[in-house]
Length: 104
Image 1 (tube, one colour):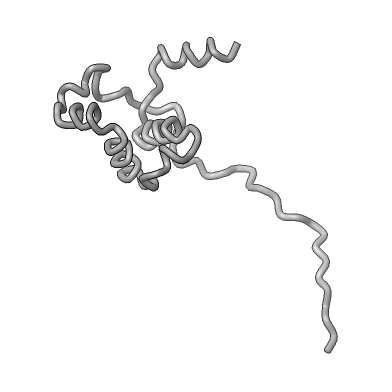
Image 2 (spheres, rainbow, N blue to C red):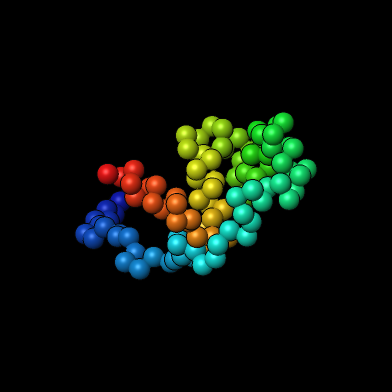
């Protein structure tokens, strides 16, 4: 039985124009103020007394494993970025200035 050898002369490359699902910059602002958490007092109390339970619930609602924020280094930051990206929420001006100043 003879075996045929196939020689690949050109390697596959990445796409030049990848699909963009949504803008990273967002199209709307946060719907609540900085102290808006007090409008939902039950969630505020849960967050105060059992923060890991609240974080686990948020991770589950975003489609992540419940342990992800605790096991993955920077998991909370990644989860926050995902929520902002999915919701189309802009980054606040203060946060933009903080990140810009921390780079230098």
